[in-house]
Image 1 (spheres, one colour):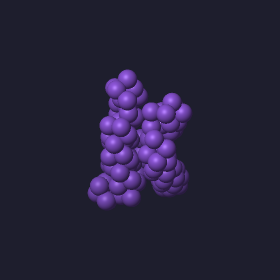
Image 2 (spheres, helix red, strand yellow):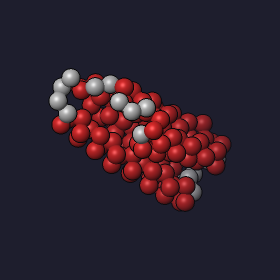
Image 3 (cartoon, helix red, strand yellow):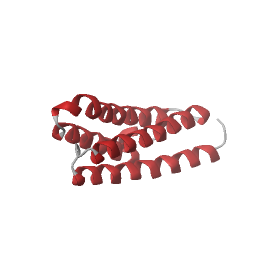
Image 4 (cartoon, helix red, strand yellow):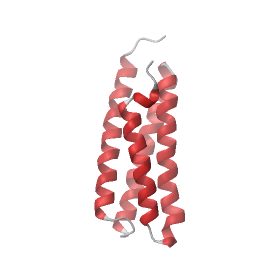
Length: 120
């Protein structure tokens, strides 16, 4: 088991979390507290799930990764709502979606390799 802070998915997750804080800072006051905090909280949860999945094995790891992938979908939806409402700038939205797609691909690969791994 490698240290979770060295995993590429964890590094992307941290970059996404920093971007989520930047997005929240640039939101209008009316949505910053509700939409911005939800996006930031889900990104924080994703980073936590990455660390938990790295420490877990078998079915427990698969559960954490599946939950992580659900959070990716939720954050994509929240970002889309923010972009459509013009509360998130297009460049920030594009950067966030790119990071999310990378985390989603890496998470999907991780889940697939977890499913192939023999039970410990």
